[in-house]
Amino acid sequence: MKNGGKKMKKVLLLLLVTVLICGFALVGCATTTAAATTAAATTAAATTAAATTAAATTATEEFVIGYASMGDTNPFHALVSQGIEKEAAARGYKLIKVDNNWDSETTVNNIDELINQNVDIILCGLADSAIAPVIKEKVDAANIPLVFIDYKCEGVPAFGGNNVIAGGLGGEWLGKMAVEKWGGADLYIGLELPVAGELNELRMKEGFIDHMLEYVKIPEDKIYRLNGNNDIALSMQLVNDTITANPDAEHILIGCLADDDAQGALAAVEQLGYEDKVLICGQGFYDEVSAQNFLTEEPTAWGATVAYWPTQYGYFLFEKVDDFLVNGTPLPEEWNVEHVVVTRDNVQEILDQQ
Image (cartoon, rainbow, N blue to C red):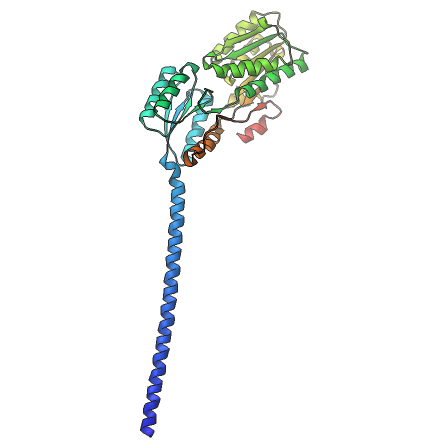
């Protein structure tokens, strides 16, 4: 019996050890399986997140933007181009840029080049309204979406300044200031850009002239609409000649399509010694000359300009273009930057926002 008892104890002990070993093994297996499952789930989640991030990052990289600058020799449009290039890069687009150089033939050739590059959309600055139908026909035939920058054409989405509002702000400022300072005005000189077609009419006639005349009465034969051509020297000469031809004019208002014209007008006025007889309003506010004019110790005859925020064109432009390319949301018929009149009173505030 003793030997049998010992044998029985050994059997029971072996059974107990076996059970414990199997139990530990099962726990180890369960722990390993749970860990493996958790690791697999984590890896899958990380892979999914990475794929989602990659998809978001590369979503815009699938699109190629064709951009035809109006002409980077002009400081305003050079800033527009810099903003568009910066924004396209930040959003992951491939950008193919050409420069129209303010030339109609070059513009048409550039559009042909962008079409041949098979871009997904064309953003085009346009200086000559006469070629708008030609460009639209070419792009439509290639089935490529088109956006005109700073130009309106029926059937083509347009982005940029709102010319009636911007010109209207300038005309309103001139009219109000003339009444406040002199009680009226007797001569108006508009430094325009006729080749721009509708843009010029909207900004300089419906904008400047029509809004100015709500405050002052100037005879029709004393309203001069001249081709300043965004040229400082030419604008200076035109203002000099027009004022000289009207020696009896005592209260003169000058509306400018761009700040280059305003700079030329100011030079002529100062040369003639007419600082107290003239009020000038420009359009653009884009360079150091525009800013410094309103930071001088004493006020100049160039009393105001209307801001267009050229450095921010890219941001506001791609807000809509993004949604169109990525989500298929139709482009608006027109969308614009906001305009504000810049004077000595608010120039620093505007500079801080540039």
